[in-house]
Structure formats: structure tokens, C-alpha cells
Amino acid sequence: MIRRTALAASIALTALSLPVFAQDSGTLKKIKDSGTATMGVRESSGGLSFTIGDGKFVGFHVELCQRALADVQKQLGLAKLDIKYQPVTSQNRIPLMQNGTVDIECGSTTNNAGRQKDVSFAVTTFVEEVRIAVKANSGITSIGQLNGKNVATTTGTTSVQHLRKHERGTGVNFNEVFGKDHADSFLLLESGRADAFVMDGQILAGNIAKSKNPADFKIVGEVLSVEPIAIMVRKDDPAFKKAVDNSLAAMMKSGEMAKIYDKWFMQPIPPTNTRIGLPASEATKAAWANPNDKPMEDYAKK
Image (cartoon, rainbow, N blue to C red; front, side):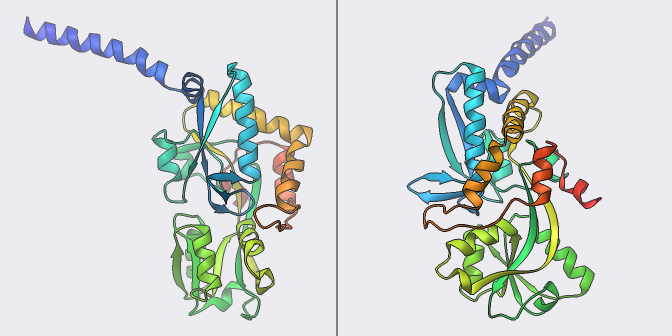
């Protein structure tokens, strides 16, 4: 009798828990119930996502996310949607997405096959080339000249992997020094603690543009990899991904995305009113013309 009662209770608990889980799952429901959405943002990710102080974040991906969330607000019939901004780093962005701290990540995250096991990505909005930044008077023009040098990169980024692969392939022996974020990595270069900084080209260009003396730095060398950068969402949440994808695709089709890109990469931007001066690449334009969420590995096959 005790066993039957225990079994019945177990079945009842299971039955009760299933609907609750179903109701609680899904970012759209979470946003509708709370009237808020939490956006993961970066403090120094070039023109994609950066802070201008006082808890304010701006940039190409930040604006795209704001517009996508405005479309989500309309879809859900919400009179008001409160957007919260949560700074994330290269190391914690995926865990914070997985545990529900952020609902949409609007930084500089590469879409690759490994990450697709943990999160999902909206359609690609920016195609990046990983390059090398050095001091203009360093004499360094290629990765082959980094032998015995200190090379900065940001902890938790894919650039570390490319450096290691390149090192094994050519026998170049350099010392890796890690910044906790992109601004910290650039400071390593600026202060002379690193001879080079390897990272996404637009992040390098953005940090150079914001430095005290931009002419003191230049981007050189081979393209180490081509990477699709995308807005990140939770895995196994197709309804929210579809809502974000539809919003982004509409901006691509209307030409609005190109205008927003121009605003953040070709025009003077805060806080120093300098311009990054990085026109949209042909690969980025191709991603806008044919919206897709292909991982980095697909680009490498070309």
C-alpha cells in the first residue's frame, strides 16, 4: 500500500511539474510575463558594443538588438518593454545565456560549431577578419615576425585558438599574454607589455580609434581567420530565435541595416566623436543579402 501511494504521489508530482516547466520555458513568455528583457552587452567590443559610461551601452549590435526587441514588444502586444543591460565578458557570456541571466547577447560573439552545442545564433550580421595590431614604429608586418615577442589577446576568445594553430604550423614561438577584456588587451599593447594584439579587426580598429594617439598604431599581417559574428540567443528556443531573425532579416532587406552599420563604423561616434572608418566587407554584405546562421567552419570550407 505504501509503495502504491508513493508511486501515485510520484506520478502526480511528475504530472504537475511538466505543465509548469512548459509554461516557464521560452524567452518570449519570460519577456511577456516580466515586461523586461535583459541584453548582454560588451564594454569594449569596437563598434559592435561598447560603453559610454553611466551604465549606457551603444554600438551596431546594441542598436540591432534594441530594434529586434521593439519588434518582439509589438509581437507580444506589450505597452512597455523595459530593457536591462548586463555587461558580459568573453568568458561568462555563454554561461550567463544558459542560466537565464541574459535573454539576448549583443556583443562580438563568433558563431562556431562548438558554441552551437550550448547556444543558438541569430542570422549573421557581421563577418569579421582576425588580424594583428602593432605599434606603428614596431617594424612588425606579419605574424612571422612575432618570434620571441609578447602577443596579447583576450581570455575566452577564438583568437587564442587561431594563434596556437598558427604557431604550430609555422614554428613561430611567441609568448601569449591575456587581457580580461578587449580594452585590457589593448592596454597591454599600448603600455608596451605586449608587442602585438591579435583580435577581430573591427575591435582592433575601434580601440585604436579611441586611443590617445591613433596614428601610433596600425593593423598588419595576414588574415588569421574569417568569422561570422552574430547575436546570441538561448538554445532550443526556436520561437524567440525566429522573432529575432525575422526582425534582422527585415532590416537587411529594407537597407536599414546598412544605414545602422554606416552610423557606427563610418561616422563619428561617442564618447570621443572619432570614426572607426571600417566599410562593410563584401562578406558582410553577402550575409545581409542571404540571411543565414552558418557557423565559422562553413566559411573555412570556401
